[in-house]
Amino acid sequence: MKQPSLRSLVFLSAGLLSLGAAQAMAASTSASPSTAMTPGVKQFVFGTLPDGRTVHGYRINSGGDVDMEVIDYGGIITSLKTPDRHGEKADIVLGFNSLQDYLSPAYKKLNPYFGALIGRYGNRIADGRFTLDGKTYQLATNDGPNHLHGGDEGFNQKLWQATPFSSSEGSGVVMRYTSADGEEGYPGELAVEVKYTLTHDDTLAIDYSARTTKATPVNLTQHSYFNLNGEGSGSILDHVMTIDAASYTPVNKTLIPTGEIETVAGTPFDFTQPTPIGARIEADNEQLMRGKGYDHNFVLAREPRPTLEHAARVSSPESGRVLDVLTTEPGLQFYSGNFLDGSVTGKGGQAYGHRSGLALETQHFPDSPNQSGFPSTILQPGETLESHTVYRFSTED
Ligand code: BGC
Image: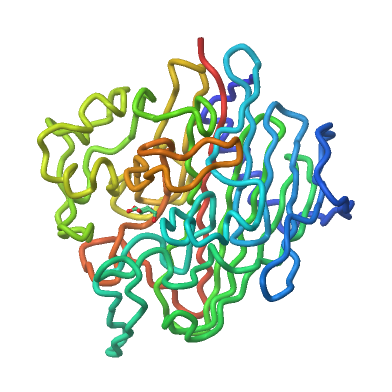
C-alpha cells in the first residue's frame, strides 16, 4: 500500500475541504451488493425500518486497496476491508450485515454504537444537565446518572439523507441530518453534514460541519470499532498503540472528567512511545479500574486546531495493518471495548467478546458544557462548526 507522508496528507485534506459541494454522482441501485468492486459508489437496499422507511447502503471503492460500506441509518460504517502485509483483505470494523441486527433487543441493550455517527454530544454530560445563557437544560440520562452520545435516540439512530459522489480525490457519501429544536432536550435546530471520502490512496477523510439556530453544545464523532486482525478474530490487546498526548482527563466513578488535566508520564496512560494495549491494562490503577480498561479522553492540544495533526497510530504485529488517525479536534477518546461481553454476534458469525475492538473517537472533551477549563463546545447561531478527521490505512512488515 502507498504510504503518503503526513505532510502530503494535510495538503490532500486541505484540497478535499476546498472542493466544496462535490458533484453528486448518480448511484445505481441493486438489491444486494455484488463482490466485484469498480471505483465509485454503488447504492443498494440494506433493510427496512419498522416504520417502513428504506435504509440504503453504499459500497465505496476509490481505486485503492480499501473497500468500505456505509448505511444512511446512523451513518454507520458497516464494513471496511483493508489488506494485511501479504495483501490479504479482511473486514477490520465490528458490525453487522443486516439492519435487524442493528435494531435487535440484544444490540440495544448493549448499545455499543458500532460504526455510527455520534451527536449531538459525543461522550458524557454529567447528570444530563447544563446551563447556557442562564437557562438550565435537562437531557436524557441514558448512561447511569449521565447523558451519553446524544441521548435516548442520538444521531446513531437517525435516518440520514445520503448523497453519493465521486471527485478527483476519491469517492464517498455526504450524510445530512437536521435535528429539530428541542430534540433530545437540546436547544436550536441543528443542521449537520458529514462527508465521508475514501481517497485513492487509502485514507478515509471525515469532514463534519454544523449550523444552529440557537446556542447549543455540539460534539460530533465517529464510533467505529477497529480490530486490525479482522473483526471477530479475538481481542485487540496485542495491538500496539501510540497516542500523541502528554496528558489526559481523569474521570470520576461514573466516567465524568474530574476537570483535571493530568500528565500521562509514569502512568499506564503514557502511549507517547508505541506500547501494546495489553501491557498495562490490568495494572493496579484507579483510573483503569473506573474505565474497566481504557475509556479516557487524551488531550491532544489545549485549543481547537485549524489543521489536521497526527493524533494516534495503532498497528497489529500479527497482520501488519496500521491505522493512523489525524484530526483537528483537541481530544481523542481511546476506548478499549471494555463493555463488549459476547452478547452480540458479528457479521462473520463470531461473538464480539471483551475488548474485541477499539474505538479512537476524535472529539472535544467529555462534559465540556459543565467544565469551564475545557475548550468550548458551544456553537452559536451564525457560526459554522467544522471538524476534520482522517483515518489512514497502511501496512508494515
Ligand atoms: C464510551 C464508553 C461506552 C461506549 C459505548 C464510548 O465512547 O466512552 O464508555 O461504553 O462508547 O457506549
